[in-house]
Length: 501
Ligand SMILES: C[S@@+](CC[C@H](N)C(=O)[O-])C[C@H]1O[C@@H](n2cnc3c(N)ncnc32)[C@H](O)[C@@H]1O
Image (cartoon, rainbow, N blue to C red; front, side):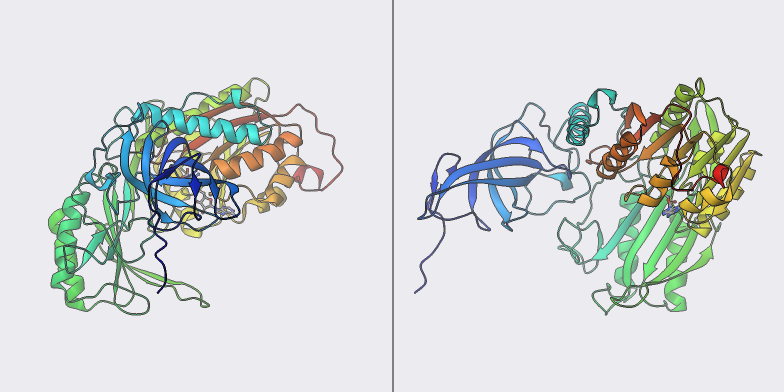
C-alpha cells in the first residue's frame, strides 16, 4: 500500500521538511510584502528532503496583509506560482480590517476576486500601491522620488460605472449570475453585496437571474448553452444594458428581457450581442439594438466644468467617472508644468478612445488631434467634441504610429495607451521626432516603467509622476507622468517625424 505523504505537523521557517510543499499542506509564515495582484507574499525558508537542501519557497496568499502572521493552506503548489489562502490568522497586521463586503471574506474557500485589498484599510492600500510603484521604478533605474502621494477617493464605494456580470454555476440557484471566483471559469458568486459595483447592481442581478431561470435558457458552457454575461453601465443620467449570448434568442425571450429592464430603469439603452469565440476561428460579435437610446451617456467634471460623453457599446470608457475627472485634472496640471518651456497651440491625444481627453484639451488648446484604432470610438469622439462645443478637435481612425506620417509633429503630446503600453515603433517615432514634452497616462505600472526607461535612455527627464486611485480595493492604479527633454533634438535617424520629410 502507498504510504500517506501528508505532513505530520505545521512547519515554519527554520524547520526540516521531509518533502517540498504540496496542495493542502499547512504552513506558518509571516506576510512581508505584496505582489502585483495584491496578494500577500510570505516565505518559507527550510531544509528539505533526504538531501537536506536549503530552500526558500514563496507563497502568494489571498487576502494576506504585510505584517500578518498566518497559517496558510496551499492551494497551488506549481513551482512557478505557489499560492495559498489563510487557514488561520495568528497575528493580524495593524493594516488589517474586516472587509465591508461578505464576498471578500479572507477565510472563505472561494471569494469574489474583485477586491483583493478589502482586508487593508483604504489609506494603507494607497501607501502599498505607491511603495510597489517606487520599487518598480528602482528596478528600472528610474528616480522614485518623482512619485507623488496617490490621490484617492473621499468615498471609495459604488464607484464603478460598468460591470460585466457572468452567468454560471451557482451553489444556491439553478442559474448563477455574478463574478467568477479567481481560478474558476464556470462557477459564480451569488452576490448579496458588492462594494464597488454601481448601486443598482444587486437588485439587477436578482431580477435578471430570476428571468434567466424562468426563460428555460441554459448557461453557455464550452460549445453548449446560450447565456454568457450581462453588462450594466450606470451613468449620471443614463443606463445601458448589454445581454451577451451565444445564439439568437426567441422573440418571447427578447420581449420578456426588454420588459424586465424597462421595469427596472427609465429608458435604458438595451443591446443584445451574439458572441462566439472558438479557438482557431475569428471571434464573432454581433450587437443588435433593442430599445432606448443607442448610446450610453456619462458626465465628467474637470476643473469645475462638466463634459458630456456618449459611448457606443464596445467603445472604451473609464470605469470610475469621479476619478476620471481627477485624472484629467492631473493631465492639465502636468501640461501647465510643461507650458512655460514649450508654449504650444497644437497637441496630440494618442489612443484617444471616445475623445474624452481631447474634449478637455480642446478647452485649453487651439488644435487637438485625437487618434484611435477603433472606428466606433472615433465616431463617438467626433460626436463628443460637437456635444461639448469644442471646435478645434480633429479625429483620425488609424494605428497610433500612422499620425507621424500624416500630421506635423507638435512639441507636446498626450498618450494613454492600453495595458500593453506603447509599441516600440511609436516610442522610436517619438524619440526621433522633435517632441519635447510627453504626458504619459498609464493603467499598467509594468509597461509604464518599461517605456519610461526607454524614454529616459533617449534624454527625456521624468519630472513628475502622479498616481491616481481609479480602482480602490484592487491593486490596479493609474499614473500621469510628465516627461521633458531639452530642445533642440539633432537626430538623423530614423525619419519618422513629418517635419523631416
Ligand atoms: C486606455 S484606452 C484610452 C482611452 C481614452 N484616452 C480615455 O481616457 O477614455 C486605450 C485606447 O487605445 C486604443 N488603441 C489600442 N491600440 C491602438 C493602436 N495601435 N493605435 C491607436 N489606438 C489604439 C483603444 O481602442 C483604446 O480606446
